[in-house]
Length: 330
Image (cartoon, rainbow, N blue to C red; front, side, top):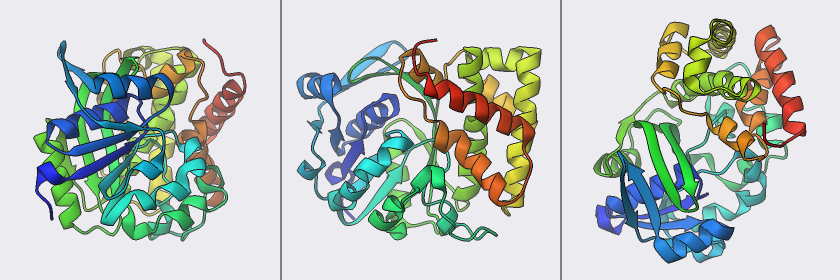
């Protein structure tokens, strides 16, 4: 393995989480490349990537490009784009990697690699709302995937600039449960960058727990135009959120996941985010398309495959799907 300062990292997507990871890893001494577009690309080329934590802003130089062909030999390739963008970029991913490089999807929802690496009653059945045409399954060998779960609240006040609001940790893990050298090395780099990073031998469980929260709080935040604190404090929204979480945890159990979390614990985790706006609410307020398929639709699709009724989640799925068809500021 290379020394940390020789580690090459690529970040595909320059939103809040992408820029935050780029800045953190550049701080840790990695050679960082970022794939971006438009004003963000121009800002990264001119000023580097900027990260604000506790009102202190620091900038770090990165290689910025809009062409994935410019990047080769990446030890780690972080995917921080929305799920709906993956079909377009799937074929461009593995050519960016070093011989033993890993793709690290730092995204919300149920990823394309999830069911094919999970020993469940569904086998490796494809999810229509995640990888309908099998593009990602063909383009990215499963042994190249290093799973991750991101618990960081951040927003972008300007192109190429990220403000970290709350939370500060990631979970990474091999889909086969091994504690690998590449996972250990990445955890060390992320820790050196100032983030808390844990390696889990049960990454499927960690992904599901996060996905259950995403599938609950993201759509509710848009439908109610509410921050996380309001979703927890309002008695009616709180009751609906608890009902949805219960359905998603029951669904995970039906998949065979040994979930060690309760609804109450997930509600406390939500409360710890304070007044933070979910990523979906931030997109809605900017008039952007919403990441509804991977976050909510995939969960409902899995329930349908298992013939499991989820009335609350299904109703919210219908509402947010309709909301997404009329994209625009709330």
